[in-house]
Structures are given as structure tokens and as C-alpha cells.
Length: 213
Ligand SMILES: Cc1cc2nc3c(=O)[nH]c(=O)nc-3n(C[C@H](O)[C@H](O)[C@H](O)COP(=O)(O)OP(=O)(O)OC[C@H]3O[C@@H](n4cnc5c(N)ncnc54)[C@H](O)[C@@H]3O)c2cc1C
Image: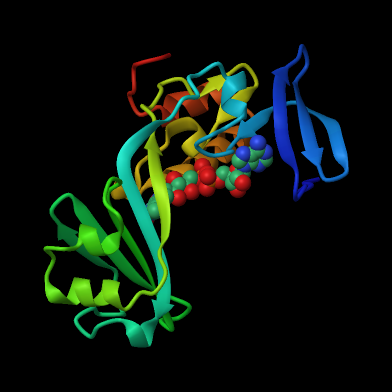
């Protein structure tokens, strides 16, 4: 049976002789949970990663993402709202794509984190991009961090997936795809019932990285 515990934070993880012990915290207090295995997919600042004894530090990438959602009617006509648009500029780029069945546009600008905002990033861009930026009233800034990938993705009965295992900057536009692929591969290996599914998972997903195995 699968049970989903919402609003539950993992505070600590420890491998035991027979499985994995987790300390969880909810607004009602803390509670221990035990299981046979743990698949840790808790993102860039993963708590599970500590139990796998891999470096947890993240480094500033020197980049910031500014994100906004705006009505499709506010998007300049130079942008085709049926498509994903990638606008490349010096040391920065803009991605625009339709959401909510084309009623709104999601816009992300990624550029140098030392500049004040999208208008400064796009100072020398052509008119359509500058018009789009001027038509966007509110941007949410998001400082980007990075970490070198590790060849080791598991320790004992604990495996890491997604950004917890191998964070990728959005300029690659693949981090979520990696996480989904990890989940598909791990689920298949566990279902196949082989003797060491986590070892097989690491072999399949470490993609030739050699730095910390
Ligand atoms: C601006 C931007 C644009 C991007 N664009 C793309 C793109 O176009 N294509 C693409 O493939 N990827 C993209 N990415 C990357 C993508 O968002 C990530 O790689 C992906 O979300 C990683 O998924 P994840 O499940 O591993 O981690 P996350 O999405 O970070 O999910 C981790 C989850 O764990 C929870 N959590 C964290 N700590 C704990 C804890 N202690 N206890 C319990 N729960 C916890 C968090 O609340 C969160 O729900 C982009 C990222 C950014 C910032």
C-alpha cells in the first residue's frame, strides 16, 4: 500500500541494520518512520544526501532567474504564443511559453545576478524582448546555485534521485527530465526484483561521472 504524507518534513535519516530510519516533523510534532529502503528526491538542499555521505554545499552560479506569468494579450505580437521561444542575448537568455491553454505566458529570463533586473539584462536586446519586459509588472527573482555531479548515487539502502543526486542549471533545461528518468529507472529495477536494484540504478544513472564513487 502506498501512503502519501503531506506537510511532512524529513529532519534526519539513518541507515539501520534492517532498513532506514527517518525522523519526520509535521505541525503536530515529530515522529519516527521506518522502511526497508529510501529513495531521496528532496531537491538541491537535500537532507537525505547527508545520509549518503556526499558533499552538500552548493555554489552560487553567478546567475539569477527572473520569472513572471502575464496575460497572453500583453505579449508583443512578435512572439508566437503557440510555440516555445528562446531569445538569446549577450550573457543572458529569455524563454517564453504558453500556459493555461494559451491564456497566459510564462516568461523566464536568466542572466548575471549582479544586475538589478530584467530591464538591465536586456538593455541591448531588440525591441520585442524589451517590449515584453516593459509589459511585465512583477518579476520573481531566483538566485541559481549549482553543484558538481557525483558518480555515487547511493549508499547501502538509500538512493538519491533528481536534483538531490545531480542538480542541473536551468540553462540545460533538463533537471526535471533527469529526475523523471531517475524515477522510471529506479522503479523498474525495484519491480524486476534483482538482488541489488540500487547498485544497478547507480550504474544506469551515474552516466560515466567518475569523481566520487
Ligand atoms: C528557473 C528554472 C527553470 C527550469 N527549467 C527547466 C526546464 O525547462 N526543464 C527541466 O527539465 N528542468 C528545469 N529546471 C530544473 C527543474 O526545476 C529541477 O531540476 C527539478 O525540479 C528537480 O526535481 P526534484 O524532484 O529532484 O527536486 P525539486 O523539484 O526541488 O523537489 C524537491 C521536493 O522535496 C521537498 N523537500 C525538500 N526538502 C525536504 C525535506 N527535508 N523533507 C520533505 N520534503 C522536502 C521540496 O519541498 C520539494 O517539493 C528549471 C529550474 C529553474 C530554477
